[in-house]
Image (tube, rainbow, N blue to C red; front, top):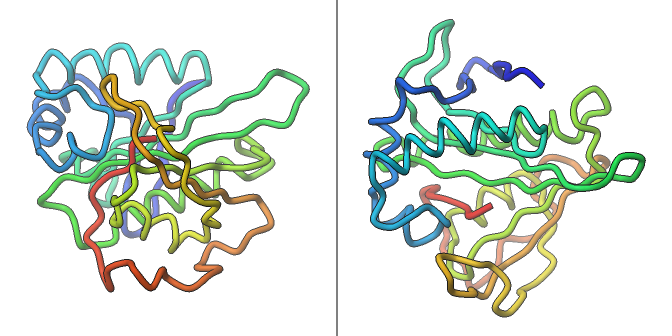
Length: 207
Protein backbone atom coordinates (compact mmCIF):
# COMPACT_ATOMS: atom_id res chain seq x y z
CA UNK A 1 0.00 0.00 0.00
CA UNK A 2 1.26 3.45 -0.90
CA UNK A 3 1.35 5.95 2.00
CA UNK A 4 -1.36 8.60 1.88
CA UNK A 5 -2.37 11.75 3.74
CA UNK A 6 -5.18 11.97 6.28
CA UNK A 7 -6.31 15.45 7.26
CA UNK A 8 -8.87 17.60 9.02
CA UNK A 9 -9.00 21.31 9.67
CA UNK A 10 -6.94 20.70 12.83
CA UNK A 11 -4.18 18.30 11.75
CA UNK A 12 -2.36 16.92 8.73
CA UNK A 13 -1.12 13.33 8.87
CA UNK A 14 1.57 12.34 6.36
CA UNK A 15 4.31 9.74 6.25
CA UNK A 16 7.54 10.75 8.02
CA UNK A 17 10.49 11.18 5.66
CA UNK A 18 14.24 11.71 5.79
CA UNK A 19 13.67 15.44 6.25
CA UNK A 20 12.01 14.65 9.61
CA UNK A 21 14.91 12.65 11.07
CA UNK A 22 16.48 15.47 13.09
CA UNK A 23 13.15 16.51 14.58
CA UNK A 24 12.25 12.91 15.46
CA UNK A 25 15.63 12.42 17.14
CA UNK A 26 15.11 15.62 19.13
CA UNK A 27 11.59 14.70 20.25
CA UNK A 28 12.36 11.09 21.16
CA UNK A 29 15.25 12.15 23.37
CA UNK A 30 12.57 13.43 25.78
CA UNK A 31 12.71 11.31 28.98
CA UNK A 32 8.90 11.25 29.13
CA UNK A 33 8.67 9.52 25.77
CA UNK A 34 11.43 7.09 26.74
CA UNK A 35 9.58 6.32 29.98
CA UNK A 36 6.29 5.37 28.37
CA UNK A 37 7.18 3.94 24.95
CA UNK A 38 9.45 1.29 23.50
CA UNK A 39 11.79 3.69 21.68
CA UNK A 40 15.51 3.09 22.27
CA UNK A 41 16.97 5.00 25.21
CA UNK A 42 19.14 6.97 24.86
CA UNK A 43 17.69 7.87 21.46
CA UNK A 44 20.08 8.85 18.68
CA UNK A 45 19.88 10.24 15.17
CA UNK A 46 20.73 6.76 13.90
CA UNK A 47 17.66 5.43 15.68
CA UNK A 48 15.53 8.06 13.95
CA UNK A 49 17.00 7.14 10.58
CA UNK A 50 16.21 3.48 11.17
CA UNK A 51 12.67 4.34 12.21
CA UNK A 52 12.00 6.30 9.01
CA UNK A 53 13.97 4.20 6.53
CA UNK A 54 13.04 0.74 7.82
CA UNK A 55 10.15 0.61 10.30
CA UNK A 56 7.92 3.14 8.54
CA UNK A 57 8.79 2.10 4.98
CA UNK A 58 8.65 -1.66 5.64
CA UNK A 59 5.41 -1.37 7.57
CA UNK A 60 3.60 0.38 4.73
CA UNK A 61 5.04 -1.99 2.14
CA UNK A 62 4.01 -5.12 4.09
CA UNK A 63 0.71 -3.50 5.14
CA UNK A 64 1.33 -4.46 8.75
CA UNK A 65 2.15 -1.08 10.30
CA UNK A 66 0.83 2.28 9.11
CA UNK A 67 2.63 5.31 10.54
CA UNK A 68 1.91 9.01 10.15
CA UNK A 69 3.64 12.14 11.37
CA UNK A 70 1.17 14.60 12.88
CA UNK A 71 1.64 18.15 11.61
CA UNK A 72 -0.14 21.48 11.51
CA UNK A 73 -3.06 21.57 9.02
CA UNK A 74 -2.38 22.72 5.48
CA UNK A 75 -1.28 21.57 2.05
CA UNK A 76 2.41 21.13 2.89
CA UNK A 77 4.28 19.18 5.53
CA UNK A 78 5.33 21.23 8.53
CA UNK A 79 7.47 20.06 11.45
CA UNK A 80 6.58 16.82 13.22
CA UNK A 81 4.39 17.50 16.27
CA UNK A 82 3.54 13.90 17.09
CA UNK A 83 3.48 10.39 15.66
CA UNK A 84 0.53 8.03 15.39
CA UNK A 85 0.41 4.50 14.04
CA UNK A 86 -1.82 1.50 13.55
CA UNK A 87 -0.59 -2.08 13.34
CA UNK A 88 -2.58 -4.83 11.66
CA UNK A 89 -2.58 -8.49 12.65
CA UNK A 90 -4.37 -11.58 11.37
CA UNK A 91 -4.30 -14.04 8.50
CA UNK A 92 -6.01 -13.53 5.17
CA UNK A 93 -9.62 -14.64 5.26
CA UNK A 94 -9.97 -14.04 9.02
CA UNK A 95 -11.13 -11.10 11.08
CA UNK A 96 -8.27 -8.68 11.63
CA UNK A 97 -7.22 -6.74 14.70
CA UNK A 98 -5.07 -3.67 15.16
CA UNK A 99 -3.24 -1.73 17.84
CA UNK A 100 -3.07 2.04 18.18
CA UNK A 101 0.16 3.72 19.23
CA UNK A 102 1.33 7.32 19.49
CA UNK A 103 3.69 9.85 21.00
CA UNK A 104 3.59 13.63 21.19
CA UNK A 105 6.37 16.22 21.32
CA UNK A 106 6.61 18.15 24.57
CA UNK A 107 6.05 21.47 22.78
CA UNK A 108 2.81 20.21 21.19
CA UNK A 109 1.06 18.71 24.22
CA UNK A 110 -2.13 20.06 25.69
CA UNK A 111 -3.69 20.99 22.33
CA UNK A 112 -5.74 17.86 21.66
CA UNK A 113 -3.66 16.98 18.60
CA UNK A 114 -3.13 13.33 19.55
CA UNK A 115 -6.82 12.81 20.25
CA UNK A 116 -7.72 14.33 16.87
CA UNK A 117 -5.06 12.37 14.98
CA UNK A 118 -5.84 9.09 16.71
CA UNK A 119 -9.55 9.52 15.98
CA UNK A 120 -8.85 9.88 12.25
CA UNK A 121 -6.61 6.82 12.20
CA UNK A 122 -9.02 4.69 14.25
CA UNK A 123 -11.96 5.63 12.02
CA UNK A 124 -9.95 4.67 8.92
CA UNK A 125 -8.79 1.39 10.47
CA UNK A 126 -12.32 0.30 11.41
CA UNK A 127 -13.98 1.51 8.20
CA UNK A 128 -14.90 -1.20 5.65
CA UNK A 129 -13.23 1.02 3.03
CA UNK A 130 -10.11 1.27 5.20
CA UNK A 131 -8.55 -1.69 6.97
CA UNK A 132 -11.93 -3.09 8.05
CA UNK A 133 -10.54 -4.22 11.39
CA UNK A 134 -12.82 -6.15 13.74
CA UNK A 135 -11.25 -4.50 16.78
CA UNK A 136 -8.60 -1.92 17.64
CA UNK A 137 -6.70 -2.37 20.87
CA UNK A 138 -4.81 0.12 22.99
CA UNK A 139 -2.34 -0.59 25.75
CA UNK A 140 -0.06 1.44 27.95
CA UNK A 141 2.18 0.88 30.92
CA UNK A 142 0.27 1.25 34.17
CA UNK A 143 0.51 4.86 35.27
CA UNK A 144 0.45 6.44 31.81
CA UNK A 145 -2.67 8.48 32.47
CA UNK A 146 -2.07 10.82 29.54
CA UNK A 147 -2.29 7.97 27.05
CA UNK A 148 -5.23 6.42 28.87
CA UNK A 149 -7.15 9.69 28.67
CA UNK A 150 -6.77 9.78 24.89
CA UNK A 151 -8.11 6.22 24.60
CA UNK A 152 -10.95 7.09 26.99
CA UNK A 153 -11.96 10.12 24.93
CA UNK A 154 -12.10 7.97 21.79
CA UNK A 155 -14.46 5.46 23.38
CA UNK A 156 -12.04 2.63 24.09
CA UNK A 157 -13.47 0.27 26.69
CA UNK A 158 -11.05 -0.44 29.52
CA UNK A 159 -10.60 -4.21 29.81
CA UNK A 160 -8.28 -4.34 32.81
CA UNK A 161 -4.66 -4.72 33.81
CA UNK A 162 -2.35 -7.47 32.57
CA UNK A 163 0.62 -8.16 34.80
CA UNK A 164 4.05 -8.20 33.15
CA UNK A 165 2.52 -7.94 29.69
CA UNK A 166 4.18 -5.11 27.80
CA UNK A 167 7.81 -5.59 26.72
CA UNK A 168 9.85 -2.43 27.18
CA UNK A 169 13.57 -2.63 26.46
CA UNK A 170 13.85 -6.14 27.87
CA UNK A 171 11.61 -5.63 30.90
CA UNK A 172 7.99 -6.81 31.15
CA UNK A 173 5.71 -4.05 32.41
CA UNK A 174 2.22 -4.21 33.90
CA UNK A 175 -0.13 -2.91 31.21
CA UNK A 176 -3.55 -1.35 30.93
CA UNK A 177 -5.52 -2.69 27.95
CA UNK A 178 -8.63 -1.41 26.22
CA UNK A 179 -10.53 -2.11 23.01
CA UNK A 180 -12.76 -0.43 20.46
CA UNK A 181 -15.02 -2.16 17.92
CA UNK A 182 -16.68 -0.60 14.86
CA UNK A 183 -20.10 -0.13 16.46
CA UNK A 184 -18.73 1.69 19.53
CA UNK A 185 -19.34 5.46 19.68
CA UNK A 186 -16.19 7.55 19.46
CA UNK A 187 -16.77 9.16 22.83
CA UNK A 188 -16.30 8.13 26.48
CA UNK A 189 -18.43 5.09 27.26
CA UNK A 190 -17.59 4.86 30.96
CA UNK A 191 -16.75 7.31 33.76
CA UNK A 192 -13.20 8.56 34.05
CA UNK A 193 -11.49 6.49 36.80
CA UNK A 194 -11.91 7.99 40.25
CA UNK A 195 -8.23 7.41 40.98
CA UNK A 196 -7.12 9.12 37.76
CA UNK A 197 -5.96 12.73 37.51
CA UNK A 198 -8.62 15.24 36.55
CA UNK A 199 -6.72 16.29 33.44
CA UNK A 200 -3.62 15.15 31.60
CA UNK A 201 -1.43 16.47 28.84
CA UNK A 202 -1.05 13.72 26.24
CA UNK A 203 2.41 12.18 26.06
CA UNK A 204 2.69 8.71 24.62
CA UNK A 205 1.44 5.17 24.23
CA UNK A 206 3.76 2.24 23.61
CA UNK A 207 1.71 0.55 20.94
